[in-house]
Amino acid sequence: MRVLPPFTSRKHLPSKLARLRELDGRTSVLTRGEGTEFDSLREYVPGDDTRSIDWRATARQSTVAVRTWRPERDRHILLVLDTGRTSAGRVGDVPRLDASMDAALLLAALASRAGDRVDLLAHDRRLRALVQGRTAGDLLPSLVNAMAALEPELVETDARALTATALRTAPRRSLIVLFTTLDATPVEEGLLPVLPQLTQRHTVLLASVADPHIARMARARGNTDAVYEAAAAAQAHSERARTAEQLRRRGLTVVDATPDELAPALADAYLALKTAGRL
Image (cartoon, rainbow, N blue to C red; front, side, top):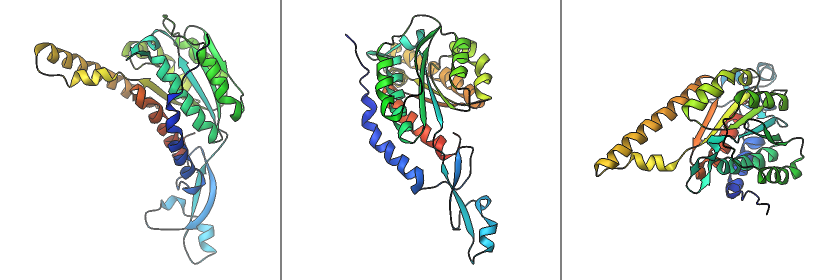
């Protein structure tokens, strides 16, 4: 029987679309970034960035005019699912891969409504799924059908092959969203050596599924076993935070959240990048 991903994060889509409508046209950004285009002129108000003043327009009228910018549409988003052994780790009753797929579906739905083009690839030691060139109306059914066949593979992900496949799939500047682990060893030995190949051309966002049980362990007290568990949880959290900081220093945006929080947090990170003109 073919089992499709449930897309439980769909409930967050209306609120994220409302934010998108505020961002796209109704609330224009004042500072120009790589992914913004000219929208309109309006009268300067205290607090506006003086770099946005249009001096030619100001000279033609009696008030100071500032330029506003709006996020560009038709940007390319590549969703990359790491289906290697770390995606098999269970958080609660489901593998981490399931939470990643759910977050990918919400982001795809939001980005397609924003006018961006979305592709997907899944990879571990070899390519497991590829969705390219779909229209907005056909995107979600195509992604769901591709994800239905995916299972975590108990092999070490080949970061070099994954990176090479991503670069072939996204030959022009794109937002690459990498769904993978924040465990120190796979990141430091696999991802970090090949990361410059991605960041020199693309904006990279890493999304990772955190285990809420670690947070509960960190709060445990009352007996010797609980204290040891809390110490282990604190060490695990510290290592994870250190790995995330390593990635941020290399220019990545990192979203580390529990399964219930990952999808909306990732959508917020995408909207923040659009607001800042980084797409």
